[in-house]
Amino acid sequence: MKQIDFAKISFEDALMQLENIVRELEAGKIKLDDAVEAYETATALKKFCEEKLKAAQLKIEKINIAPSGAVSTEPFDKTEE
Image 1 (cartoon, rainbow, N blue to C red):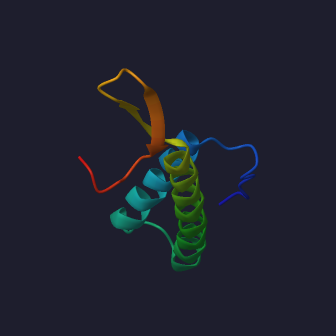
Image 2 (image 1 turned 45 degrees about the vertical axis):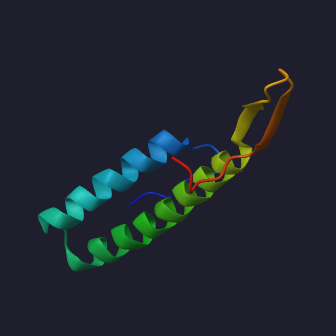
């Protein structure tokens, strides 16, 4: 596995690489040393994706419109659906 430059990779590319690694590991056709390296890379990609998602979640706000027409925002509560 090649070294990943996390400063230059997008969330989508990281997720695609992670999915590819998972498929390869599930297929069981990788030598043990390569599988260990792939697992380590997958762990780093997973952490990167989780951090990107958390940062995006922190930017999302809920827009409220009061009966008077006043508009305000508040942090989005992830428990609401």
